[in-house]
Amino acid sequence: MQIWTVANQKGGVGKTTTTVALGGLAAQAGLRVLLLDLDAHGSLTSYFRLDPDQQALSSYTIFEKRKLLNAALIESLIQDTQVRNLAVLPASTLLATLERQGIGDGMGLVIGKALQLVQAKFDLVIIDCPPQLGVLMVNALACCQELIIPVQTEFLALKGLERMLHTLKMLGRSRKQELPYLIVPTMFDRRTQASTSSLRSIRNNYGDAVWPGKIPIDTHFRDASKAGVPPHLFDAKSRGVESYQSLFMHLQSQKVGHRAQINS
Picture: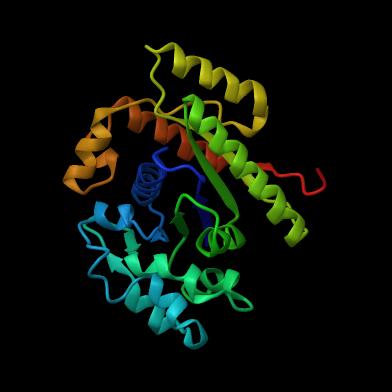
């Protein structure tokens, strides 16, 4: 079982769209896919018409029952979607209370332990993270083999990328292990100078850590979200879907992404 984490310390950069798009394409390719929502806002959960305010069984339950974890419990949290091979483990707004509850020993490894219990049931898990560093993001980073960092092609998003990469260096030092990552430019609008110059800056500053392609602005993403289906099922020929297909193929061919240097 592979685990991919989609994270950035800035919101609104396309994390949930990336999670759903890649998950849908992986399911279409025949992989058994689990999408895990670790964001208290529950955008991924809401995408599949589940209410994060009403989820009695959710990713919060994993932390709540962390001393009693077993395969049956984790399986009870997982819900099928209307898409073949695609399941979701929804979020609850209660996730927002975790930081206030205090962090005990091993709290950063809870999600990894939970996923190990169901590893025989899935080929790929994709984790959608909250846009801030905390116990939830630490859990998602600790258990993944690949970190995908969506970055909107605009100036303020570049600052968020700097913070995210600084976080990776800190975590790499504490784990004494390199963290693989791939920067994915999103929301690219070739009609604007701001977008093209931001993309150029990303590529110049981060080189081979950046995916060679880019995800364009595509109104079909909003339409797919409204329909509650992955983008490829709404319009398989849209520019955005074709870009995500290229990204998925790149991730499949690359065992690991660029690695954060823990000694830098």
